[in-house]
Image (tube, rainbow, N blue to C red):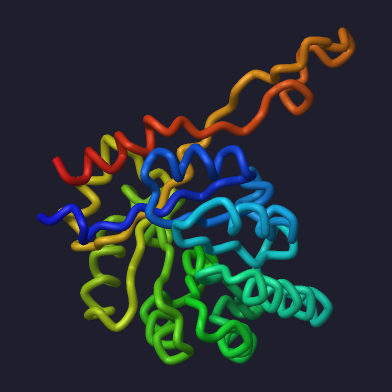
Length: 246
C-alpha cells in the first residue's frame, strides 16, 4: 500500500497541541475546544492563529456546546455565524453533526451549513454514531454534499465497530469518505485499515502534561484542572502513521 494514499487527522484542543500534531506529521487537524466534552467550537482567535501558523488542512468543529446533537434555533444561528467566520479565515473545511429528536439526520440544517460554507469541505462527525439508521444516514449525507463521515461504527470505539465501518465503506462506494475515529491507536490502526478498506483515520492521542507554573497554591496542589495541560506527543503522531504503512 502506498503511504501517500493514507490521511491521518488529529483532533487538537489548542494551539500547542495543534503545533505538536503538525510536527508529528498530521495531514489534517480537527481543531476543537473542550475535547473532554467531545469537542466544541474553538474561539475565533484560536482558529485565526492556527490558520496563520500551519499549512496543513484545518477543519474546526462547529458545535456550540457539549451534550446531544439536537439544537435550538438560537444554537443553529450560532453555528451559521461560526461557519461564516471559518470561511472568512480560509479554513479548509468544517466538522458538523446535527440530529433531529427521532435520531435521524437533520437534513435541512445540515444542508444549510454545507451551502453556507461552500466551497469548503464538510465532515459529519460522530453524531452519526447516535443516528437511528446508519445506512439511511449515509445516503442522506451523500445527498447533502458532505465529503466524509467520522464514525466509530456506532460503538464507543472504532475497533468495536469495525464490522459496521467496513459495511459503511462498502456501501459508500467512493461516493463519500468513511473515516474511522475514536480509540484509533498505533496498535490497531493497521487492523482497521485492513478490515475496513478505509484510507483516512482520526485520532486525538490525548494526554496530559504537568504545568510549568513555579508557584503551586497548596489548596489546589492536587487539582489536575489547575496544574495539568492538554498534551500531544509528536512522536506518537509519527508512530501512528508508521504503524499504518509498515
